[in-house]
Length: 515
Image (cartoon, rainbow, N blue to C red):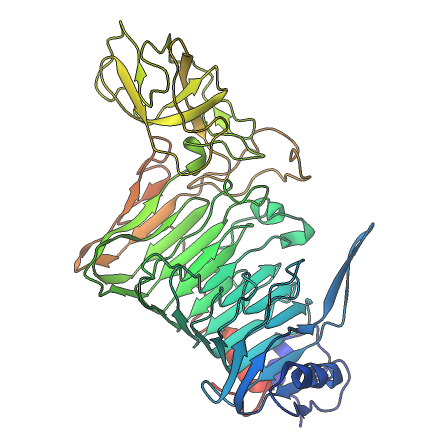
């Protein structure tokens, strides 16, 4: 086989069909068992296609491709290959997930694939199906590493008891023409960029320029997502660790779209950027569900999405650290070392009510109704704070807290002193982007506000049951006209080429593969 010119042009770092090979081979696995697939993978050379035959095969061990070993000088990688894993087609090659959880969590997926930049990798033509046993919870298909040419296509993720697909590292690529049939409360896809630019925790992504409308993201396009049964809050995509992803031209039923911020995931940073456009969302269940999606971190463009059914709202944005302290970042309450803080102490006083009260009683105050809504109230005895939900002339109530607090629920004893303060900007918060590089684990350094750029969210031409659908903010620190804009195209923004160029690239270099 002669190598197509298009391949050589698009993959300049690869020399003639796999680093000097005159032709790429098609390596058939003896069966679809993990042992036989692993043997075929081990025998394959760069540029080869490993063929997994038709049939139903129960997997109780992972197939591993490439390894990463961590030493004192950092990670070293071995065994990464430019491969295509190709089944006989959706519902023809069926691999059943019975891979048990491992103590380290490193081997409890069906596929654990370590990639490297310069070596394309593709998985196509399979069904990954849930079994009856307890399995590892990270994902059925895990793709890691640094390849900028990853394609996952024509794969059916069928009622898996775990996430379907997990991508992390410093990866670009495309997930296309897949089917995700999801059980209750399981995510379809998780995207992270923990190793962006060679840094850990997503720090590199948060210190690098915003790259909307470019190839520098994981693209999710032309897929079908459907949650069945009671899976009303299941995410099509979730993300943190500096994740950068694009969700476009997908059909979604009974599912949401979301990310995590720099908070509940600990040291890992929040999602960096999202582009969500030209999708359809539908919820036929008669029980109303709160919203189609939301964001707790970074920036986003949302446009040309059509939503129908019993969703109650479109897209919600919020900063969770405003109502809870998360290690190692603290709370975004006017005192957090990584936030831009307002130095003012707006009010002081003491609780005059009973012990164990969830509501502050401050006899003698004369506040305006909801004067302090959105500010932070600090309990100086407890040493923590919470975002204020409402106030009367003499009382203050806070938002309910779904996370465990030190010392139990946020409550007040007689005589507890308080301060009212607020931050100006939360680290990695809504509408924030590139800033100073942080590094290290506990505490991350430098321990100061990293001067992050303002990059607002933009929403335009979205509908909910035929009516205009807007972003809604839930914080005084997240303001329309500053952190986000409704009914306003992002200035200068242009979507990346559709369909993604990697689709044609892989179809050229793997003749006979599914298109």
